Length: 496
Image (tube, rainbow, N blue to C red; front, side, top):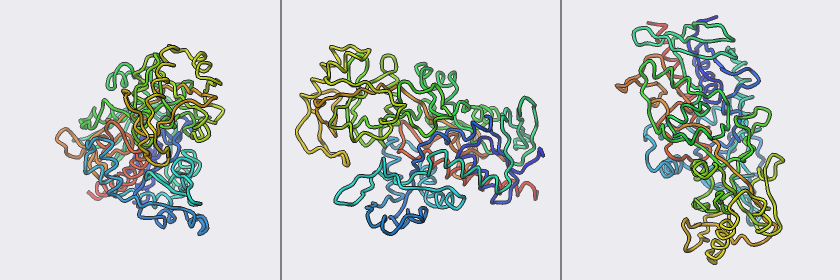
């Protein structure tokens, strides 16, 4: 069959949420996956699974985790995280630049969307490892990110593919969408290169959810800067900007921060593109607030303790990229080594150890004299105060540039540890201009009839930074919404 109500381009979280939503609303649906079946799932396959949703209280969380027992619940302290809290966090970390209507759609629809995902078979669990601490025999959650998908991105995509199969959604693999077909400014289909054969698929609507341009070195250089050619691609190698190119070719309006992206500090020896045999975001290095971070010349370059990692990791990747050799070194001593996140203990983690700072630094390809001098000056600048990694404790340095404003402990108890990190790009913030229904807008900011978008392709929500877990949630919300409206549009076209 080469005629469908809705064709979804892409096969990650946003794409499959869109496909399932469209199918639930009565449409016949085709999903196009550019990669082979064993590399399906887009960037979503690689996610650690944390997904940010607004919620009222623990009872709301238990609705999507019915297996959570009363005994477990009695041990949990779960602060409310309202839609206003979510919206304010989003606006705070984007310096108020997030487009209000799109941002409000994301946060206001987040909880009902996650309930819907549970109904589709996606299972969730509490994010104990990264978002809780134990105090007075209670487990306290913090940071508005208590929920994650079971089995990370693998479990998320397995559940969504299972649901798509149950609903009879057709999926083509090694099927690259190359061009949108239009007639009198309306979408009528898409040209597909399927395993080397060019096929024209008729469609009443096309929904683009095939990622941004993070895996396209030329586009990274053009839009983000030439230094971004050196960035590691954290996820799928297939997100090369195809959907953006097809949409702009027919007059879609670009939107958002095309010069910005989500990037993180990741192990310096990470694979150059996402390795489907080692998914789950295992190479990230996010305990930097507990230590200090120096470049090869021996200087600190960010305030490691500016905020919880949820609110800084997506912008610090680019700061690492700016450093000589695109490398930095996270330094920890034995005081904090036991409380580092679990990714520091994986066999894939690159670590250098030394019983003394001099022994450690002698093993690093850095300016050793300056490196040791910077650590000495840092230690001397650390102020007294109570150290508490579960809150922004205000334990800071004084007299440095940059200061460390929270969690400043002297690096003085051996053995000492260095973790080399580089920059890994996740997705670009720039995308297409869509409305709250996921309809793609033209240069006059009017909907292009029959064209929808979701996921990374939605521009205007994230600028400079983003609250952890909100990218995955945005994909789900706009996937569900755009799928529903694509199906309704297709039904109206059929009647007319």
